[in-house]
Length: 331
Image (cartoon, rainbow, N blue to C red; front, top):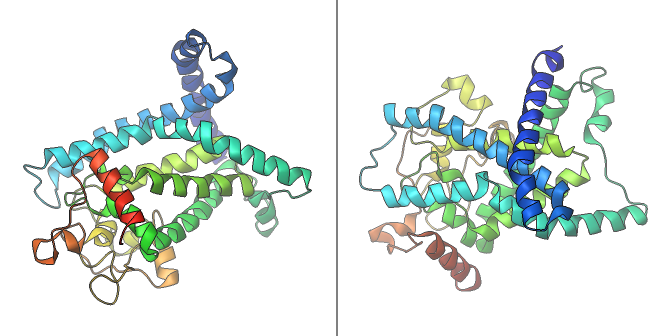
């Protein structure tokens, strides 16, 4: 019933918008560029572009007013830092990073899974595998979507733990945590190599557990939208129960808090708390949840003058370059 009332109508509307955008904009561009052989990839890229445009509209209409009405901290005089985060957001949400993935990682995955199939190694269909446990429930599109959302959120949790556990990985992930003025635009503020590692792991898992391409787009879209909200500079709490069901701005702000969210057992020791991307139950299950936070300043301890005032870069290219220097130099 829910599929017929909500899922299918939304899918139909999105399909018509994607087709219209592809035929009116993307397809002519590909033909004019002599790249008609890329029409299939272009249609898939149009879906990511449309999702990004919808996300940007929702961020501006819903999340930005929350920041203005109930800011967690004043951010006067920090326009440049926010502009850089906007650049990161546009790079990802408008599909430019995804386009690079199409021409680099996707062909490698095609080769890898094609060779595995030749050798008789097949992936699984996670929803079909779990369906016998709940007969009649996981046959619906919404239940299958929720299952994959949970599966990828669990993967994201452990990826995030890795980013905070391994020195070399933290050298890249520190770009994300170096933002002293966190806003709704800060979610995509990442080193590009860090994003590449994460996206390869997600794309590989999607192939391995049998996620349909459209469903994968939906999972990523919902995840990104909630991540934008959780990074927003707003005093928004979901209440005692709500904050244990869905990651919100207060829960995630503690993860970004100086000396709290990225350190364990004293200054400079990697670790932290509140790693979940969507569902705090992973932090509760694995003992990394903290709900006692308020709205602490965000950043990394060694950025403070009394701890060395380390430079993580103000502009996009400086942040990327310094991340590589940390990766290949002394961490």
